[in-house]
Image 1: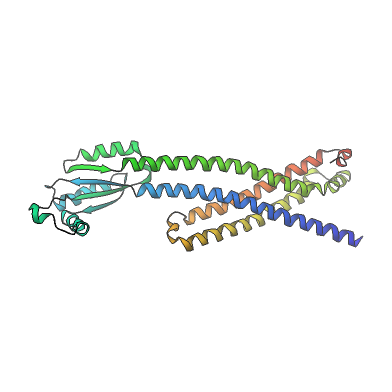
Image 2: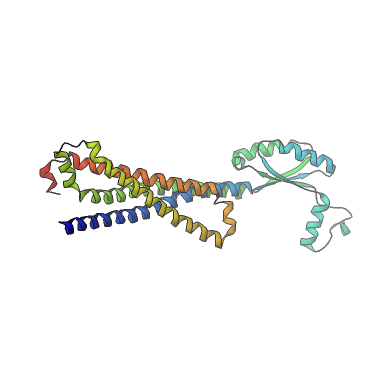
Length: 292
């Protein structure tokens, strides 16, 4: 009898370990999808905020007037950062690139003072740039304005396509992960179907019968989530070692939300699957237990 009990406990322990491992693997995949979705959002904002609108000022605009113009633009809701490049600074930069001073044979400095405006991510789109450019061009201190419209359109289009692909992948993976975890939990409950029936015969309530299964499912979900989070953290750390600049996109907020989502998925999916599986055997008559 004692050997039989030990064998049953050993099998039950192996089932729990198997459930933890399979659930961890599924949670790693779900965590990767959440991680890439959040990182794609940050990457989109990062790329948009580095698109530059170049404003060329008229030669009659003094340095003080240009700085006042900068202050005025800083109060606009779309401006994230503004760099003022004076005529002399522009000439020095061009001299480094050209290797000569154009003013020596032209007799004057041909380079205008410019403002390089970096927009907030929410305003780095075609519709917003149209009214922003129109507003800035109406200022009498502005001679010309330019920005890379084609590049901006390509960035927005590519990021939109990537977001759609990730969203579809997230939906499909959530469905697949639910099916895999459900089957694994169902097998674990299946091995104890006669115990469930025996408890029904002695008058135990359904909630009382479900309680230990749900408790075990929550524990398995937490353990599996911790393992999955550790695997994802190791991957992020390896990515950081090879590309330190990735922390501009993979922020602590992204990692915290990913870890929280994995933990939530682990607890909710395992608990819900256990609840469904136990209810299935609770509703099943005794004669059906021998046919499955």
